[in-house]
Image (tube, rainbow, N blue to C red; front, top):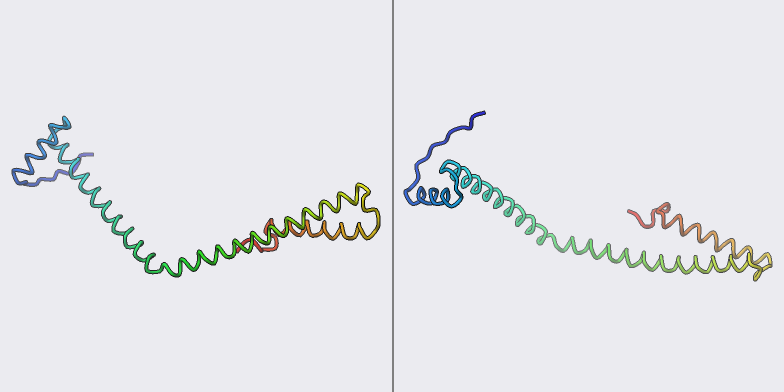
Length: 139
């Protein structure tokens, strides 16, 4: 498919610069003009993108208080979750130790089995909680 032909008149210094560019890159004057126009258009597009990004940045800075409040809330929720996870991990460890002690004969009475079963229930609850079945770790 043939390319559309465009004609333009340039000042002499611009024509000399195009000629110099063509010689430096060992290309025709037409190819030099195509490349220079393409580079100029690409630069213009990049400038438009840069302006869009600057505008978005200004909007974010203007709304920075709300964004910071959201990040702070997320951090607080994460801290609470870490504390809850630590407590549940401790309960799990105690439950596992108690169950092992019971089944190895160190706690042979029925009361020991009941307490062990309760701790095992806590272990199951922790696993289902961690997996998100309770919705505690997910929004």
